[in-house]
Amino acid sequence: MKDWLNDLSKVANFVVAVGDCATWGGIPAMSPNPSESQGLQFLKRQKGGFLGKDFHSLSGLPVINIPGCPAHPDWITQILVAIATGRISDISLDELHRPETFFKSFTQTGCTRNVHFAYKASTAEFGQRKGCLFYDLGCRGPMTHSSCNRILWNRVSSKTRAGMPCIGCTEPEFPFHDLKPGTVFKTQTVMGVPKELPTGVNKKNYALLTMVAKDSMPAWAEEDFFTV
Ligand code: SF4
Image (cartoon, rainbow, N blue to C red):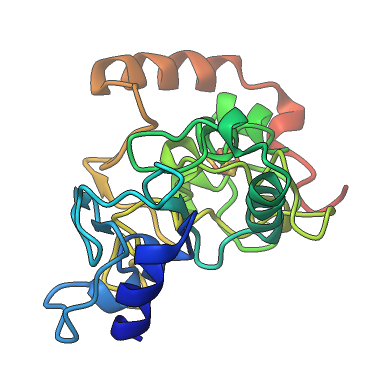
């Protein structure tokens, strides 16, 4: 496979890495990384990877990264169609070479549980229809770049819509925990405050927000978690 990659990357007009293993190394690259796995142009967040940090395909573009475990089929097909129809120049890449159109916003954007997030109305069980999964089940929606709630899976759903917390699988650090039961789907806290806060929110503001949100929570936000 390495020989193929070496040979093909020299003559390819475009190189697209699909999925976490190809983009950042993914689960196989977890420390201590016995297989010395790496992505095509990154190892986790560090630029370099198998093809090296200076690699550009014949088109002049670096490796286009479409992360995810798994990557969303619509992200893959839309990028391949953009390449095939000569429209890839319309797409800008972020510093991790991800197409911004899919990875600029957070998983939380478009989540049906946002109103519960705002009032800190938590759900502690998988599969419940209402309540936010951040406070008890470790949802990473507020700090993960993906469009899972804007471009739905199979056009109908997403993890959070189905009651499963976002596990941050589009970020280079995935998996964030050691995958032991009891750590993955549980919010890690220090003195009751989540260890990791939504991107851009500091601890002091979070505490303030919590107080206001809890005080303002309307009764309906806590009720009726089991019905539509
Ligand atoms: S924390 Fe998760 S479940 Fe809650 S609103 Fe954000 S994405 Fe949705």
